[in-house]
Image (cartoon, rainbow, N blue to C red):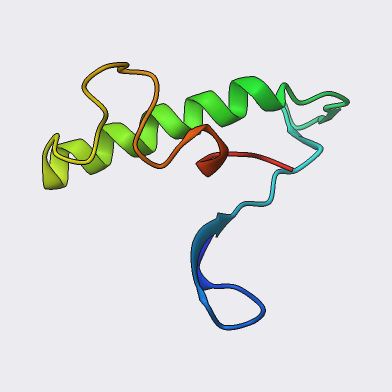
Length: 81
């Protein structure tokens, strides 16, 4: 994972790049291919983990009190492609 704080045009655009392998070695040393990633699950898992860490470090002030699953960054603020 890599944190980028700006986009190609050098404007403020914090985002995280993450590479995921299409397989891995099993406990007994054999390679196992992974042919499908559930991107919705990855997106929601990452969003939950990130927001929990942010809340633990800086408090609850950035979260939307109306809907615990929606944040002030907006739904489009967390996506995987």
